[in-house]
Image 1 (tube, rainbow over the protein chains, first blue to last red):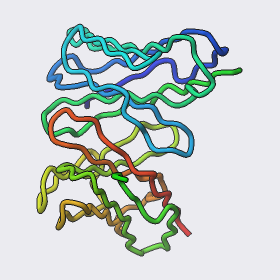
Image 2 (image 1 turned 180 degrees about the horizontal axis):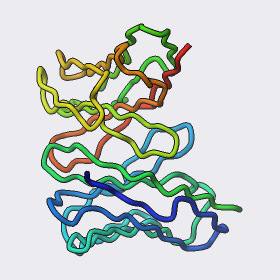
Image 3 (image 1 turned 90 degrees about the vertical axis):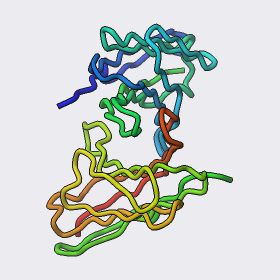
Image 4 (image 1 turned 90 degrees about the horizontal axis):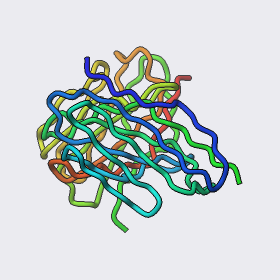
Amino acid sequence: ILNVEQSPQSLHVQEGDSTNFTCSFPSSNFYALHWYRWETAKSPEALFVMTLNGDEKKKGRISATLNTKEGYSYLYIKGSQPEDSATYLCAFNGGSQGNLIFGKGTKLSVKP
Amino acid sequence: DGGITQSPKYLFRKEGQNVTLSCEQNLNHDAMYWYRQDPGQGLRLIYYSQIVNDFQKGDIAEGYSVSREKKESFPLTVTSAQKNPTAFYLCASSLQGVEPQHFGDGTRLSIL
């Protein structure tokens, strides 16, 4: 059974703090790794899709890295803002068909 | 605006009853997916479809059925064989390959 683990489960930071969380996934049959942000009462929103080992992607204050050989990805948020409060999901894609295996998410709360 | 529409937002099922959750997209996406979320769990894949008139079982397909007669529509039927249907259901769509998935707002199903 393929498993995707995210840590920590939840995180509370102050506005302005930088933070990061981890996604661990199977290192075999890798096709892509997705990151999504899911705000309360909204639908999940795609942040990044990463396919190459060593890949690094950035979107504003959020960035992500990928290590497919050891099976992990980090998501970084620089200078957290209250609007960054959300659950961050990672999902492993082991084939071209796009069916994803999701982790349980990291719930981030940013206090003003 | 292009997007994914799920209906209804809330649905109640009586014992022994089949219910159908609607998912429509106008993004011209080939692939569509149904996920289920339970408290403390990651999103789990129920069914997915890469093309009209074709679909595959995901990790938890038992007690569910789908159809894909039109590119825009991918309804999910929760049958009476699904013994624990109370959950939050999300529909998603994507272009083929490693493209990110776009999600609807979800349907919350409860048992009366």
